[in-house]
Image (cartoon, rainbow, N blue to C red; front, side, top):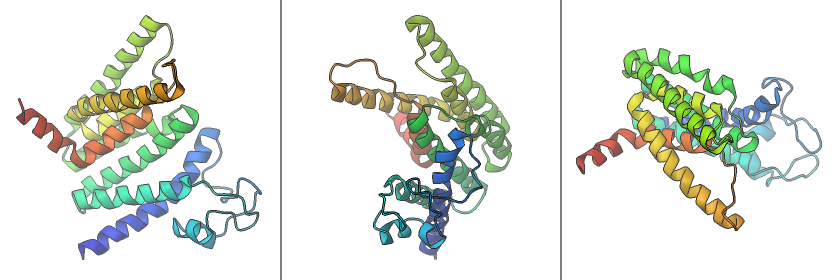
Length: 254
């Protein structure tokens, strides 16, 4: 029975992931995410309901538009599968309840944040600032508690703002957008102040490693603009699933 519910969570997540593809494309451009219906970016042909089944339609169409034959980006089924996997993982982790609802809401938002930031180097306020009151409100229901949420907002927004301002003053250039500051405040609202410390550490380490690899691949180690939002999102998702356990393990090493 548990496997049935896990599969159901995956399928619902994949459906939401299909909608996320619309959000990722349209939200930064200021286009309505509701209308018009999805269309092929190459020929403009409307995508029918049967051609819009998450993951399955991509496989049946062999990755090409049914009307013009243009290639469909592999990102579309990837986002659908990723969102489905996150929903299924959250169900396994938390089971039914408010914690599950908060987790899938946060994880879904992080998928959108990641790909929008990769594409446009921005994090829309509707996702970051909107997450602050949402996470705070949910703290009364998930067991996190409003104090931990409030401290998380303050620590998340304040710490990253200080880092961003310090970098700007020292280097005379922007190294971190304030979208990242607002995102970390939202993550603190959902997960609490302890999670903020974990997210900053893991996000910074992973981001630095990826930056070094990217600089090496570009040959020369020159300055490169790499969005930080995806690394914060990765660290936050990691915390949702195993963060508290990793922190207990680390503290036990001391």
